[in-house]
Image (cartoon, rainbow, N blue to C red; front, side):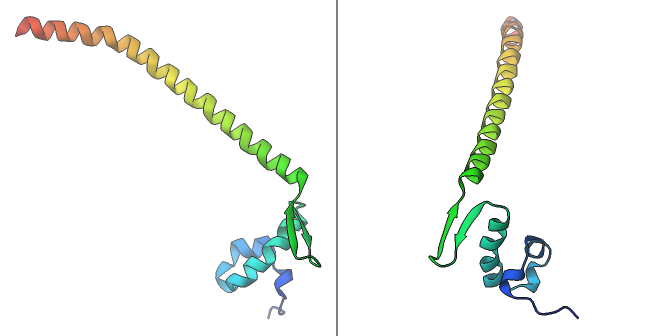
Length: 104
């Protein structure tokens, strides 16, 4: 039988693998402690403040920026391919239209 654990003993693994076994308030209460263990936030229990650490902000926004740039480059490549296809198809469509007019 598993020993009773306090709210602060809940780990992220527990949150992800056993959500039904935990009460929602327990998961919410455990989240600041889990993030603090990742050094993502500073938890000041005396003041009741939670702040995002500077290094985590840099990591988070750096990752988001790289993702944005990557998606932008992929979209630009797709647009370039579409323009290329349109340039190739344009003369073919015009020739097809001309043939249809001749047949009419």
